[in-house]
Image 1 (cartoon, rainbow, N blue to C red):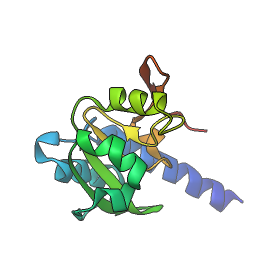
Image 2: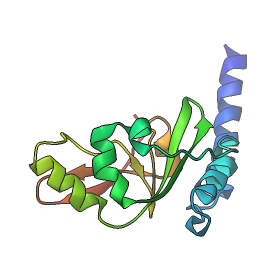
Image 3: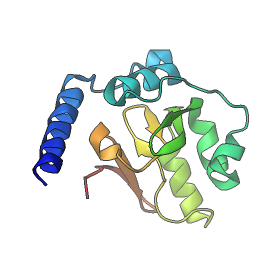
Image 4: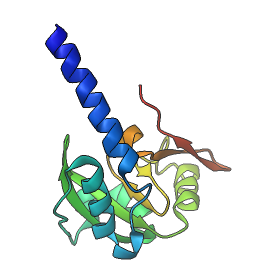
Length: 150
């Protein structure tokens, strides 16, 4: 039991040091490569970006219809627990598009992305450690809410 506790403490300290020395945001001038480099510095994962042609195949037809016009660049990388974590460089306007799709009954709830400043990731697990936000939307407004650890 002591050995397990010691491993947990050492792991927590190592993670705190890792997050503490990381850049607060990715270098978006490098596109998805900048997002991947930022994630790699934080987690030692996401070293290789794969680019794909068919966003609808990756995100599904409904989300692709809403998200795609607002994605400047996208790709994927491997980062546990995700085999394909989506890295999205965003253009302005996604919030309004989501509210319109919500009003038209095309979507329900909130977008299933974790948002940073000008970018998003498709994952949900572990995003609270990256300082990312979720987007909560009603028919009249959207708000970025920090993702909290459960």
